[in-house]
Image (tube, helix red, strand yellow):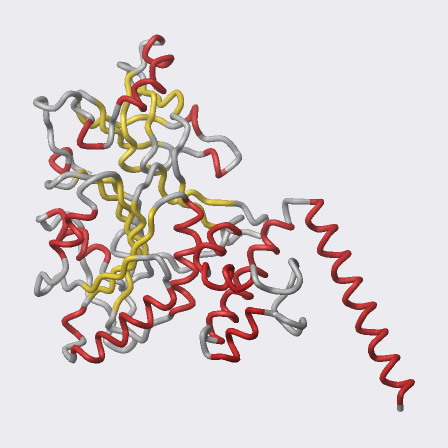
Length: 368
């Protein structure tokens, strides 16, 4: 990425202020400053090296000292790094503790976590209106976003492709039902609709753009940047899917303030220890669950289950409950692979349910 993508400012209290540097980060960095290291924000990581924006400008640095076997501890876009002041090559010697981290599970059989972006304040989930809405996928993104510690928002892109305002309103309502407590905004990079509102939202802190290929992330990033910085490719007409225009995670300072991390389209968004995020995504179900007769109610067939009653009354869409169950099961499997105690509890629960099933079956046979 060229240095022209990064504004140079000396009028601010610190040249890294446009990239999120503040007094708290300065205090965290103090021990490294005593070692002669300089601070910088990681704007891109690629094959053992990374681009870092320092007070003196962008530098290329080697990541050999911050590339452990644990993928959760590998330096990533958005990190604040401690970089050698000089040298060839220059090395990143450490990075500061992360305030937030957007993590998904990898596709490997080891169920490791992969950090997509660090120190993020706003998680912008881009969803294209050019194709049928997948509410389950939106809920999955939201669970990861809430778990990260960032504030999620759903942005429905390509609103110009839905000219009927009634239809558009119904689509927004569907997403709002799947995203309680989350802002939902319709935008069109073609007409400019909604981009001023989004610009104001991302004008402070760090925002990350998330979504599948073809969601319009790069086009949206260009609209926020006010320039054709990110390459854009057209989505296929047959299914609205796009190719991976963005191939790396890039951090850019926005002209109106704030920082944006653009990410490649995600084919898979597996949960990784995101129990709290799932609970926040389905907050209304958690509220109903607090009224259930049993504190460990599974909301399947238990008596006086407030969740099932809400479904029967039409207050809770059955689709929401099914999605909630699916994400909880998936998250439990992931956590169980690394938590021996939880694995034991799952096996014990399975044995108890099997014994109950056999007892019920025997009782029915005896009654015949």
